[in-house]
Structure formats: C-alpha cells, structure tokens
Length: 517
Image (cartoon, rainbow, N blue to C red; front, top):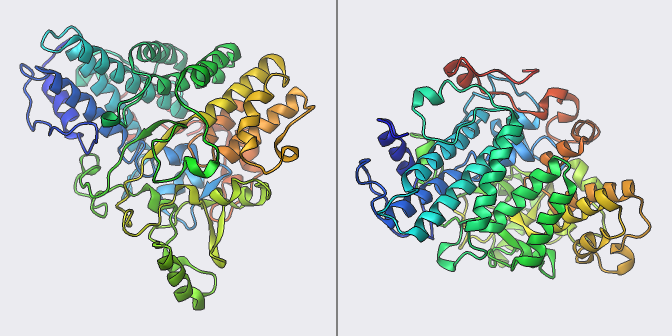
C-alpha cells in the first residue's frame, strides 16, 4: 500500500542517519516519493538510517535496553539514585513513570523507537522489493537487513511487553494508531519467518568496510533464543550447533581479549554496533533540543568511575591521579553502573573473569565503589569522557556455547552437554580440577548454567531475559542483596512485563494495559 504518508515515513528514515563507518555518503535532506530509492545508493542510505535508530540511546546506545534487561536484577546497580535507572532499578514502574521522560530516556522512548524501526523497515521493504531501479543484489541485501532489524525490534517488544501492536505492511498513521495488541505467539511466528529470510540472504562474514551490519549469525542467535524460551530444545540446539560449526567465529583464548577496546572485531564477536569518536549529533533526532555533552557516544562513561567519587581515603586522591596518569588513564566517567553487592559477594574468588567484572581498587588504592572494568575505556586520549568510539557488543559466541550446553542438558542430560560448557570454564580457571564439571544430575547442571551465564555474560543485557525464561526471576531478585535501591523488596509479580506507556494508551484507545499496572 502506497499512501500520502510515504513522504513522512521517508523523512523519518533520513532524519536518523548518523555516523556509520560502512556508509560515507551523506543522506539527502528532502526526498520525494517519486525519486527516493531510485538508485542502489538510495536503498543503502535507507537501511543505514534504520541502523542509526537501533543505535539510539533508548535501544542500544547508552542506557536503553541495558536498563530493561540488566537493571533491577542481581548483577549491576547504580552507585547513587538517578532518574535513568530508578524506575527499573527500584521497581517504581507504572504507566505514568513509563511515560516520564527525564534528561535521557524512558520506557516510552524505547517503545517508540522500536516501533520507529518497524515503521521504517516496512517502508523500505515495500519500496525496494521489485524496484527495477535497484540492482537485484542490493535489493536482496537491503530487504534481508530490513527484515532482520524488524525481527530484532519485535523480539525486544515481545520480551518487554508481551502482546503488542503488530503490522508488517505500510499503513497510514491513523491505521497504526488504532492497532490493538496481537498475541506474542503470532508476532514471534512472523519474527522467525523474518529471521529465516535473513539467514538465507545475509552474508556469513561482514566486509571490513561494512562493519556494524548484522551477518546471518546474528539472526541465527536470536532464532535460537526464541526456540529456547519456547522450550523447543532440539530446534535451539540445532541452531546453536549451526553457529558453532559453520560460522567463522571462534572463542578467544582468554576472557580479557574479548573486551580489548583495541580488538573490537575479534573472532568471538557475532555482532556489535559501530560507534566513532568525535561524531556529534548521533542522538539529537530522538531528543530534539536536549544536550548530551556533544551528542557523542558515552556508554563506557556509565561504567568508568568518576574521580570525585574516589578513592576511599580522600587524602589518596592525588596518589590515584598520579597512578592513572602513569597508565595514560583517567577516571573520566559517571560511574553510574557498578557491580551489585550480591554479584560481588557470590562471584567465585578463583574465577579469572572476576577482575574483569569486579574492580574494588586501582593499583592497590581502595575505591568507594566496586566497578565493572570490562566495559570501561579509561584512556584519556583515545576515549575521553562522553566521547568514546567503543563498539556496542550485542552477541558473542560464548553465549552460544552456553545455550548449546543448556539445550543438550534439557534434551538428554549432562553427558554430552559438558563439551559446550567446558570451553567457557576452561579459560576461566587455572586448573582442570577447578573448571571441569563431572557427575552432575540434570538439575545440578541446570543450576550450573544459571551461574555460568551470570559470570560469563554479566551486564551484557541477557540476565533478566534468562531469569524470566527459567521461571526464577522473582525469586532471584527477592533474595539478592543491593546497595543503592531496594528492588528485592519492591518487585511484584507483574514486573515480569513492562507497563504500556500512558501516552500510548491515550493516543490509541484500542491498546490495553499489562495486568498489575
């Protein structure tokens, strides 16, 4: 369906085109429907614009999906009260607080930008498919990328809100604004169809000049996660083994190498989003008129300590500054994301991953807070405060190995599952006696997976999703220990889903609220 609203849709697409290393061309300011997507370049610019929406703060930028998947569980928490994290970290969620935009984001921002991805991908698919002005190869690639991004958006929507408005064609704004909620099973069936198309048509390896795009393996890992949440263990295992055996990705020898900011495209990374230092205006379209310290990428600053918070003994501050300077570093962040008390107390002391996840001192100088250094970049020249060029890690192969171990255990018990968990544990401990698991029952292995995913994938936006699909989310949070907020006493049964934002309910009379809100 092509309507008078197509111009608005296309302007929405182009308004989000930000810095992308895989596209050097500048988007057009105004594109009329009769000449938009008139060349291969037009179609590529369109899909690049959607990647910019995905990189927006409320999704994969600074504190978007991190907030909804990691805060308020048992791994990270803020080091002080802050409106970015309060609604989830302290479970003060409601239709009103979901709508209350602070200086950065809200539940409503995430909802709106995920649906912006959907709206734009529907338009691109409609305008590119069968367009004789665009080469067949570009048509296939652009549509495959669009269908992957649409699947990604709907997957997150069903994870966070359950049943939701659903459409895969070009609709008028009035039609979109009157959609009722579709059951999540129907939505996920369409997501799986999109992911199958993406896997059949996306490349196995992304060329260097297009890094930041998703390969077929990014689509495959989402498919595996969907099967596992549905407890279709065989389908999940098949997809995991396809990634392990057929992709070019490989586990790195050490955990630390995975997070080396100088090796962001290492073999273990299945998909990461590309950001660049000194690029301004990346987030302004979503938050017009608001200031973001130059609008540069600053997620690492959430994990980097701020010097005014440290160290424990204020008399040692100059000593700390000198130690940092000797290493070419600064405590140049906000320090808002720290390791939770529960995480620190339970992380095995002999686990080699602990120093990458828990930092309580710097060069022997005790710190006030316990930070998570694996996401830090303290280099003051290459990664200054609020101006980082670090990639945003989304998926990596270690996750897939642990998924395969879980699927195999659920199907057949631990016998053949050890081969998938052991490579992850082997690089995490110094001796075989420490890393090798033997003689476990299926339940004991299941519980080992609960812990292994916690230590291996800490703060990688998997924890809440895992806890919910395992059916232990509420119990884990209620029995965890925290420093800043009290999610353990505030969490309620209905917090398994987020509230539909009030502004969406007011705009669309056919929307209904999730129970409990």
